[in-house]
Image (cartoon, rainbow, N blue to C red; front, side):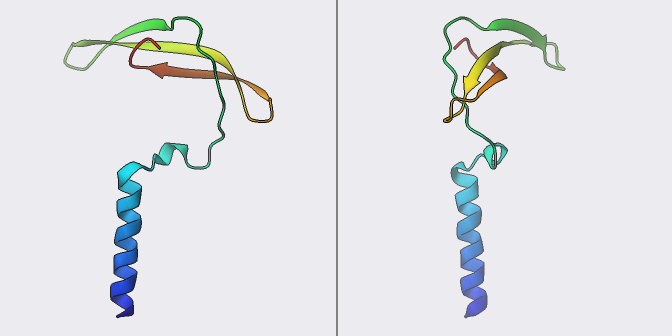
Length: 79
């Protein structure tokens, strides 16, 4: 019986992780930015030659204590 409870518990934890937990964000700090302008468009090519665009941003972000940090990130569309 204990094996069944352990197995079911592991399956529930695994399902919770798959359903929406972004493992890249686990243990990271939260910063807030205000986007007021356009990103810099950067066009690249996939291995098959098809082009795609990403928009690069470099903004000042603040944590909940007001500490400032320069944030660099990309987006698939112009935010």
